[in-house]
Length: 450
Image (cartoon, rainbow, N blue to C red; front, side, top):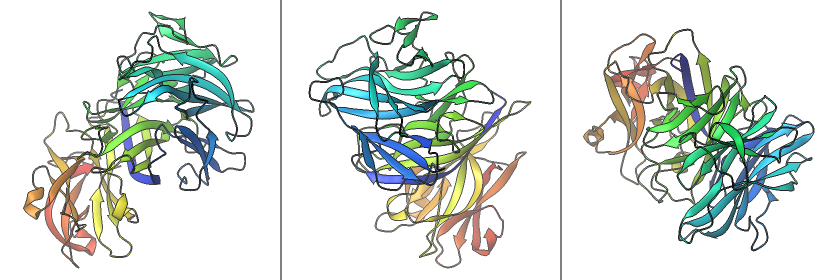
């Protein structure tokens, strides 16, 4: 793990906002004509077609609906992941029943379904994974939110959330018999998928994928205690080790919306060439994003290109996230951020990647925590600054952008804060002459080169 480096690219807002969609991990497949079909869900599951895995802004069509009243899926069916088996598409379907979301009650389980028309119609093969508990009047019960991973060893694997203790469990089934699931329990695949016991494998996260070159399973989780979207890897599909640094820094994961911080959840790892979750060293990190100050009516689908490399020697800093300068094509004003742009800034275009910010403070080097500053509304001025210094510009401190080295390090590049020639607005640059766009305010620190 110490020899791995990860670079996370700029965020692409590929769908949203929606009040009634984007409530599960995003799944996608490549169609025979080379286009892509994405699946997004909230109670019902919808298919969206586009030219690429990130061209997902088009119209939707329902492909799975909630079941009949009193059924195991009467509150909804969410397609969470897919796998190919010859000419058949296999889908994992998250189910809920006995729900009253106003009091926090629902009961979760997983079903498996197949499709022979690339996900437009599905045949339900029945429930395959459920918990040992029963529905309760005021809490979430059951097991669900699973991702389906082809282990390339003759088995499919399911990484699921157990709601009784919020831990991850794993089950598997032979690829030739994908309805025969056994949970991992006490060192063996011995317990039935329906109602069986399971040994937890930790708080790993259910957005799992298979790293084909290394033969590892990768999983990503939203972990506010860790400080970001956490990547974990496993050689044996059971025991996971965490990368020491987040893929993307976050300040919190508050589901009580609106909240003063962003929410980044339902992360998954996808292959940009095939759409599935058998991935290589270049993959897509996909997640649902709710901006600070917004409720669930403002859900967006965000994609980031990620490169993962294994080196011969340990890396002193492993993870970097793109620190991007964006520009409004109309006003020519700049925004500098590592986060996604939504709302009034949805039309901004990427100008340049200035550097890659560290996703947590380095252990053995002095560093600067970089935050984003916002002018009070209705102004749209924005800047990046050292932690605690937004007030110097009469701005309010917002999200954590990342960290910079305080001094130049091997493989680092400078990050300057500049003032624009036109309106004195703040922007960032990697050049001491601010690329001719303004004058230097000060050197903020040093970020990672790619």
